[in-house]
Image (cartoon, rainbow, N blue to C red; front, top):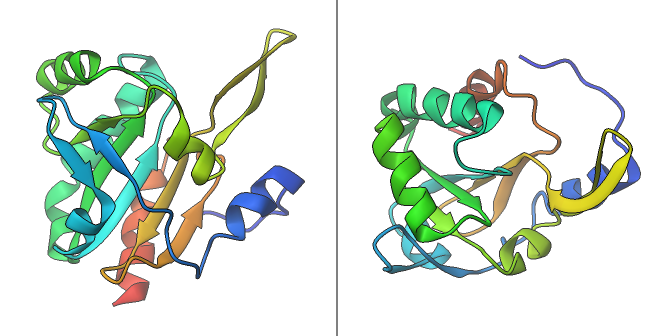
Length: 169
């Protein structure tokens, strides 16, 4: 279980979504099929995770951890769905290469990442740019955000998600 820490102002804005209705969306999966949040929640809770980029080390580790723990997540009545700005074709290659067993949705215009407050100013080697901050939202079957994990550190994250899902039971 992660230790509690103070949140930054941008984290606080993301955390304010907890307990509120999740921003609705319709995005495309790897096959071009449109997937809506309401369709996902009609099957139970959703572990909706936002990540920066397909095929990068941290994102691959996170995706593989969700893949390896998907049976435990499903057993707790939830499913995993990932969102990034990558194209459906990129998602398809990522899914195939790492045998991911959950959908990845394309948000090329960052409309959904903005709605969830995870498209933020970032900095790398002194260069500032806009990008997706690794974050996870647990959304219940009624479409309410039950838990927010801002600024996710990959190590131990899936275990934190599993603990949160158990606590929601």
